[in-house]
Image (cartoon, rainbow, N blue to C red; front, side, top):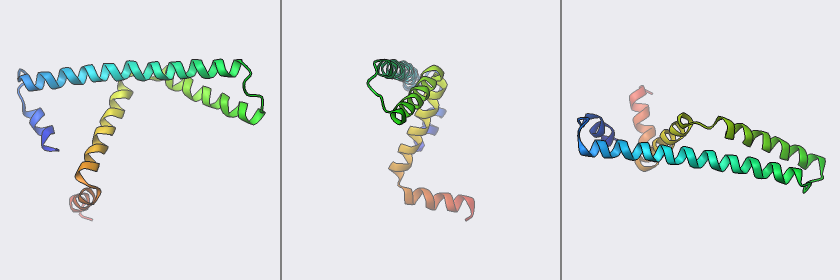
Length: 115
């Protein structure tokens, strides 16, 4: 699977496969940015509505709910394409590690680092 990175990078910019990959990446990032922003926005609104309706009366639970609302609101207000790309890159890298196998990864890492 790692050979794909060099294969894509080695393609000419006018290569139909590279164009397709880049277009799909662009569409995927736009989709996930819009979707994730929407999900956290709705969660923030619904938690606020739940809080205002007086469904929770226990002070400890109210404090936990307020903390959750603050955290979700922070995520909703700072969500950006860059953050989605960062997570997507992390997710794909972790999937590659899983596909290659942890043992193989650790062995190669140790050999590379001279451990």
